Image 1 (cartoon, rainbow, N blue to C red):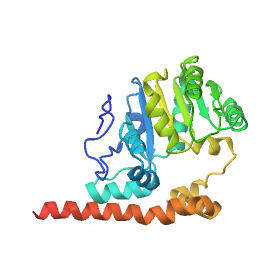
Image 2 (spheres, rainbow, N blue to C red; image 1 turned 90 degrees about the vertical axis):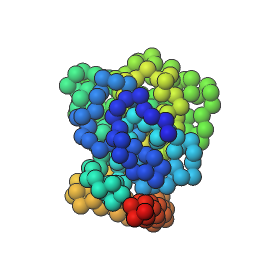
Image 3 (cartoon, rainbow, N blue to C red; image 1 turned 180 degrees about the vertical axis):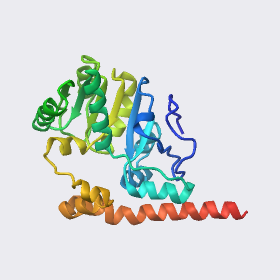
Image 4 (cartoon, rainbow, N blue to C red; image 1 turned 135 degrees about the vertical axis):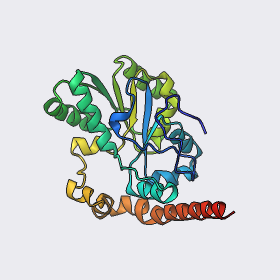
Length: 255
């Protein structure tokens, strides 16, 4: 497994695919270093089993946040360690607050012009000291080399403090990992659906459901056609992976 150049990750990991899950608070990250931040949940965990490039991208994260209660529960079961879920929306809000205090800049790469404009307008009100830039890449399954060069050039013309990438998983994680060295941004974050949540084009479940750890259930009810496979199909598959790993650990302990 490729080790990150920073020391943000814990040596004790959720070991099914040798992922290093971040176990601390966002305030404890050394933000002075260039880093790539991704999130992992049960769905992305399972998809990484099928997609080698996605697996490599997640493993190559400098910080891999546990964005799902299934990951939190699995970590507790396998390593007896209590960690806290950190969603992409939490990371987004945390970084905007930091930038607002310092008068920093951020760049949104992904989504439509309409979504990006809505994000920019909201930030003007909530985080007036943050300088915002954006670029809407073409909507396609695979980017050409020309597309990639244009996106990289747009970011590097600004050299933002934070680069938010929203192209949906696993596309965004693979793109960020592949181009990290070429991107002149201090912090690079793949946050996907957060673009739509913050823009208001997709409504995130309320804090009431989030605190009850039922955000996934509300999203399933609201978007059954899109979400059923993520939760009802891959949920049991993820549980199977975890249980097999737990049995393997117990057998090693017995021996």
